[in-house]
Image (tube, rainbow, N blue to C red):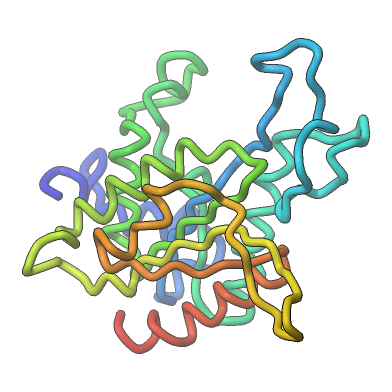
Length: 232
């Protein structure tokens, strides 16, 4: 963690609290990582459209419609952070809420530096926060949060005998499909990744499943009101 607690002579926590509305009052910080874009088949296949994708719980529109904006999913995720903050009395935020530019933003978009690489930002924001949430959905671009889900537990030493924080303060939230069998309701995982599915085995990081946006918010609130307020 050396070198990631400060940026440009200031503590990362202070930059977060000055960047995110409501964070300056000292509430607990919850760093939320998730997809900022829907998978866009047009990136790779000219003849593919959103109609080829399954519905996504974070998508603001049906995928088959022409008015789908793949970037809208970041706004949806930010809205979840706002609701979580209001209900649970914390400050939930995304990396893009924080006024620290990435290398790409400095080099390609002319943002004022100094820059901090994206993975370094993720580790630094997680370290400055009380808890971290990783959100995965099947029809979204989740390569970034997948990298974060590896780097952050490693930075806390969760595979060792003396981790720097309880693994319960990290939580995987993965999309699942609700099904009815034998009169019981249960969840069948839809986000198929052995690496993510076995995070609990490797790092003792708990995994929660959700079927829709409302259930994701419910699970996030339960995470905060349970483990975060008890352990952080």
